[in-house]
Length: 249
Image (tube, rainbow, N blue to C red; front, side, top):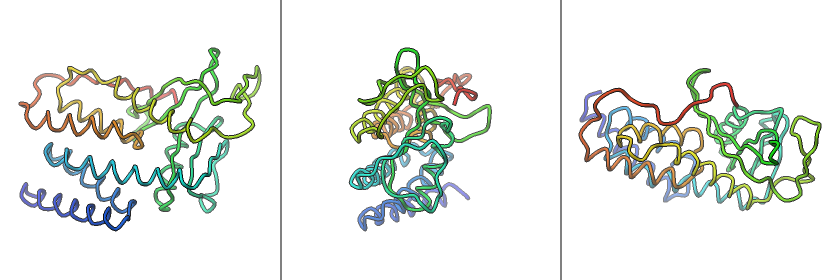
């Protein structure tokens, strides 16, 4: 595909995404935006990439609001039957891992089911919950995001058991939202502010792939795209900004 055809295809995708948003077809809008984002990133079209961020952010925000409005909150220790998935907030916990949470999120999305999915690891000795998200990739190049947070009210530590704690009920919606924000904020904080904007774009897209439900990641990506469009291409060897931990999830 030549540059003119690629540009025309991107514009067509975003016209379709805008129409889907107007029609409140949020899953369709998100799919179209993600396709356009990947194509623009591959082509190095930072100006269009910046413009994709806002409708993508809005489609995902609306999807989360529908999940919140459902009122459903579930904690999962085993993989559910895909046919039983309902709109809501899902917390995946051991023996399930971050990759299980990603697979669950993708299954929910494929079914058109609004959801927010988070994963936690066993309680630490300090009484915190490591909340994690993993990106796509192979065994040695998968991005893992992690932040340690206070658990919800009512969680009690235990010396035994795979989670090292006990909870009578799933976390509150407020905890889910705060944990999701903290995870995205941690991803942003790991990217050096002096990194070339084109490389910041790379890292922010990887972070969004791992944790798509964070509005500021979309906003920082748009800012980095605009800066990359105005900057000369980077020179020298790429320094990886986010350190991956392929065996830690």
